[in-house]
Length: 443
Image (cartoon, rainbow, N blue to C red; front, side, top):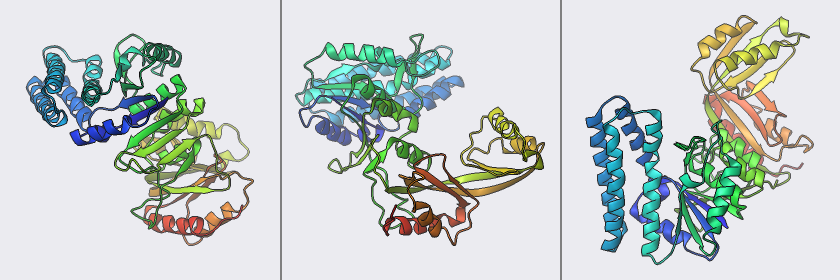
């Protein structure tokens, strides 16, 4: 069994939906297909919800009519038979009539969750009908029948596994299943969604629940790259990553996967493969628990970083100082990224500056505070275990002419990070790329 997830752009036009249909029906292995809403749909549904919150029923009805018209156009282009067109148009009209009913009553957060779920329900019904028109017999697995969160808003893994296995066993001979990504029910049976990672999270949870051979995340990007192709020439896709390396890169600019969404796959030891719907023959990137020893995988960067330094003699030989500092950031719900300490000071970085003034004011009670804005974190990702002698020298040699505000190493076995000025980002990436990829680094 394989789990294949396709995002909104992969099913965003009739042609792309047809391409995906041909792709998933190739081969003989059993598959569970997880679909997002067609591209742009969820944004419109959120806009409609906002209009309803503000009591603008007229504006909401206008937006609903425009979205309904868009789907009618897709139906006309997607199907060959009049029977399929009539079937899908009837379903779509029913859903949009239900959507219009929300303009007549007080709109609540619960109704918003229901409205936002429409996109996935529409895309999966259209896709299943397309597969049927092509002569296949897919089984629709309604995510609302097995995907549930607990009272803390986290996936109820035992419930998901039990319900999903029961549904699969009921269709034991079926080779192809289709379900919705993103949407679920909460612990009280209400329509909800998985928030972080959306459909990727759904695919990972399904893969872990059914013990899949592989989870495939199909996008319109050819995997993760070893550098920013807009800055560094001759970049290449990274073909193999450890789950921890992928998590590091997800923060440092590789926006393909949210680290949380692949945790179920990591814990179940199920590999996740990133593939490109525009180039289905491409190898993509395989993320697994396997480590490629003694190898640097990628260099990535994150802009809009702010560095904060707190210097205080009270920190010398004292305990509790760092706790007080961290509590200030916690009180303003501001995550800390990099951190370096000395006997009389601590430097750290944040990318959320919405409460920066308040944080600085509170920190000044404990010492002198210095703030540096417009900074950039550049990280090197790979097998960077501290016993691998030589990689530090190679990375530091590349940085010899670049002013470096902070260096962080040791918090992870797969990342060394440098804090630099944003204006030095391009030459930093080029220098690290030349030193780490164009020459052999001996460990």
